[in-house]
Image (cartoon, rainbow, N blue to C red; front, side, top):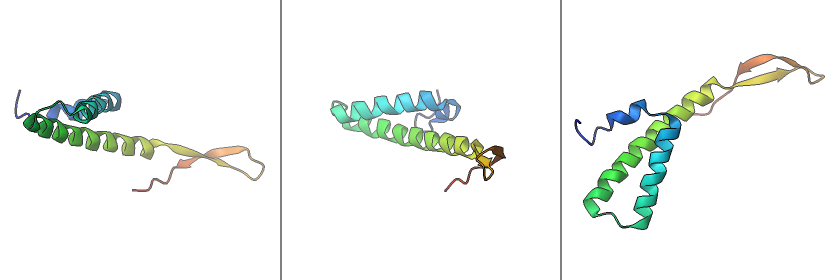
Length: 85
């Protein structure tokens, strides 16, 4: 299965899949019933999932367009949304 700390499988996950697993990890860590070594490993996986989700969100935001309106409020076209980095 490869090195468990490289988290290569995360790169192919959808946002929803990654978020669901991240929520499961947070829940396990909050319960506190995970041994120290396992908690470190799942925390690291959670960090990798968070980075992946952040990247997917940034790409989605970059594709969003805002609608341009004229003075009477009628749509005149679209333009890229300014996304703050």
